[in-house]
Amino acid sequence: MSDLRGLLTQALDQAVAYREEVAGNSAAPQIGYHELRERVLRPVPEQGTDPSQVLEELATIADGGLMPMVGPRFFGWVIGASHPAGVAADWLVTAWGQNAFHTATPAVAAIEEAAERWLVEILDLPRGSSVGFATGATVANGICLAAARTGTLLKHGWDPDADGLFGAPPVEVLIGADAHSSLFSSLQLIGFGYNRVKGIATDGQGRMLPEDLAARIGKAGGPKIVIAQAGQINTGGYDPFAEIVEIGRAHGAWVHVDGAFGLWARATPSHRHLTEGIEGADSWVTDGHKWLQVPYDSGFAIVRDRELHQRAMTQWSSYLPHFGQGDRVPSAFVPELSRRARGVAVWTMLKTLGRDGIAELVSRHCALALRFAERLAREPGIRIVNEVTINQVIVNFGSGDAGARRAATEAVIEKVQAGGVCFAGGAEWRGDWVMRLSVSSGATTEADIDLSADAIIAAWRQVQAQD
Image (cartoon, rainbow, N blue to C red; front, side, top):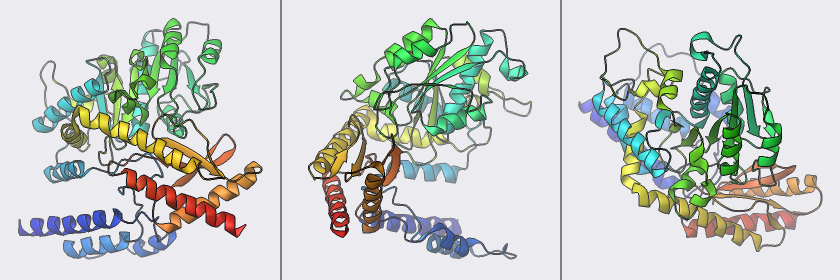
């Protein structure tokens, strides 16, 4: 055990040193991918190396090539900062080395079941809904849409899990024009393809227009799936769920909601109104490694009908342990037998934060995003592009045509990233290039927002001075 203690202590020292450094320096990676490739693409080692030396080499390789995602001023994407409690629990999971596929690991199975119940209650979704603990929203969307595929086709006399899709009644999929790209990947994975969908028109914030959904949903009685969105990735906009659910129900459609980060608004009184009617859907997706601050990888596939969820996912073999009637088998809700015990870190963070802590975290981030927008908007030449309703702020810089604004915005982003005070990235929105600011780190404070706003304004003034 002396080697184990020594290696884990070494890893701990390296991890703490990194966390302490990134708390004060949010600079982008200083070494690029191609240079790092040259560090690691070496011939296969013929002889082994002392593990302590390997760990030291690993830390050296990564030094300068890590994105400051766990820092308090990282706004590049909606990414949680991996709370220390979740990290510690995840380390325990790794040390335990349990395959969370079945009740053969009773501790893991029980903890995951508790996490499932807590999640459903905190998000105030229909009690008894099942949760599949997946890697992230892409896979979780695939799981929910697989359940939707099963449910809609069974109603029309076809068993897709047994007979596949060859010869099956065609399923009509309707999705907002500003849906996240990962949904199209999910549709591809379950055999629906990403071109065979009906895009529904959206408003200026990317919210689905229910009148267009009503006009475009098929009048025939075939199987249908409607995909709504809680939190558009650029604007943070929320679809009008009550109207969408009503339209879906009238046409016998399965309604699914992609809420990778936005579903968490339901957990806080200050922003719950954004999700009004969402409980009427059939399935929902959200991530743990975003607002819940769980380490990667952690996503939740939530389905109202537990039986359909399990039917779309369950695999079995004679060598697997038997289970009792009513037991929750972790592998019955995801397409994996071999997987880490993802529910343990989730349980840990739910226990650490509690209902009140989660509500406070979400509300605080939304307030910080509004503060960010207000600080930036006071500077001439900076334009807030979206309605800041949650934790997303998109801005661009300068005037003139779209090309001129893009050049100015890209120049500001480059200077901000080089400055090291904060990290922000770019995205395209409605023909404009914007800086996107996602406030989602549990460590972010008002002081971090003010410091970051000052850095962005300073970068913008430098760009103007150079013109």
